[in-house]
Length: 94
Image (cartoon, rainbow, N blue to C red; front, side, top):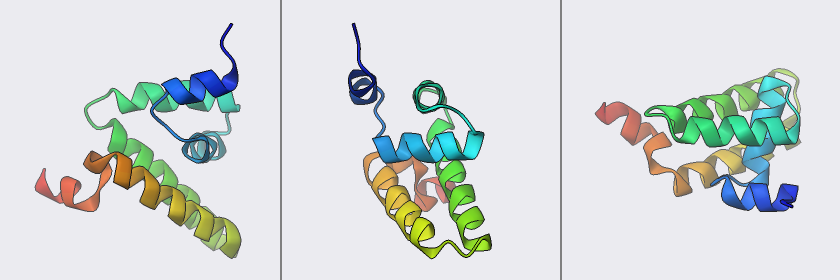
């Protein structure tokens, strides 16, 4: 039987990235994991996840939640470092 930790390890996403998707889409962790893994395998999926995280950052800033905003910025930085197709440079090349 697979645990949630096993599923996270297989998803190509970190727990923080999954949490950002869950927050944005109002999903459970498992549903967000499934959505994130699905998106990663679409042609523009990495960009879609980047946009999700950026939306979460904007929402945190609108609510003056600076701690969450800073945390999400680190999540975005880590996501782009492991998924280079999500970078601004990759978007500009297309």
